[in-house]
Amino acid sequence: MPLVGHPNLIVGLEQADDAGVYKLSDELAIIQTIDFFTPIVDDPRTFGQIAVANALSDVYAMGGKPLTAMNVVCFPIKTLDISVLREILTGGLEKMREADVVLVGGHSVEDQELKYGLSVTGIIHPDRVVTKSGARPGDKLILTKPLGTGIINTALKGGLTEKETVDKVVRYMVALNSKASELMQEVGVNACTDITGFGLLGHACEMAENSAVGMKIYSASVPVFAEAIEFARMGLVPGGTQRNKQFRSKMVKLASGLPDYLEDILFDPQTSGGLLISLSAAKADSLLARLHQAGVVEAAVVGEVVSQPKGKITVE
Image 1 (cartoon, rainbow, N blue to C red):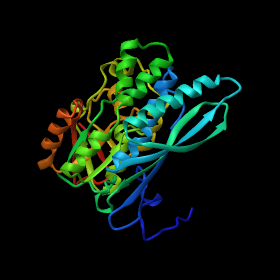
Image 2: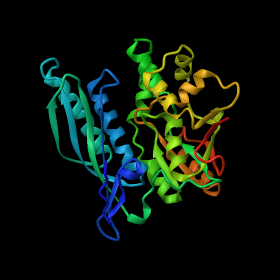
Image 3: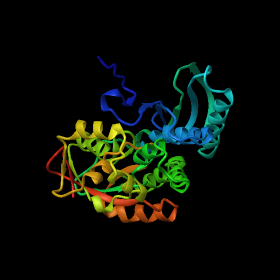
Image 4: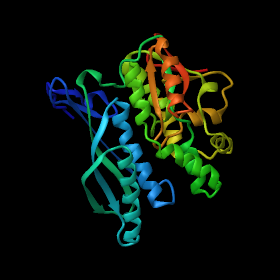
């Protein structure tokens, strides 16, 4: 499909980034994104909060501030009571208010399967856009949230999770990436993406191929929900995990003896996951300390950027 370029288009389809960026003036650019999905938890209001946090994350990954949003709704009106939709939208609005985002409209259609999300518009200075490209050899990689939401949500659907586990994972999925985004802009970083459907390794692959570098991931340093390890050992992984592994198998080299369950966790598709940030080693300790002080306590250095082999991810 031929793509239409424009002199004011800073980030478009050809770069396959987290959001599009369009320059309005020398001082201002807009960030645009859209994301919606099916329920992953039973409580409608919580689902609304998660969906909104997930949609806003693309703007935060670019280093921007989300300003306005529009609801995207697919609803099976013949099989679900309208009160369910009301709760979903209420939860979403609560999260938008927390993010200081204004809901300006939306669109709904009747569908056999429930779906909800947002179209989001944010702002940023044209010179401060953070993309997946730009990671440099010697950079450290910081991950801001634990992995394992996909695995735990799979166990939830099978009725195998306890309420405490669900509550803990939900706290992370509804948590905005706003503070991490704000702090990374203050410190100055080279690249960033948010960890969602392709898993940590899938999104690391995107950063590596866009930046013409390689990456090392320290598997022992990656924050992971303990319950996800237990379920992964049992083979309770979502279908998206296998698709992620197959799609990126030629780019990823695993250390000899790495357990299969750990590979599944590193490829686990996340919902409203954390940011993966690439920044100079000299700045990494400062950002990590600021993140911890701001309450992003699970943030950790999980790897480094290397010059060779380009386009490859090595897991140690």
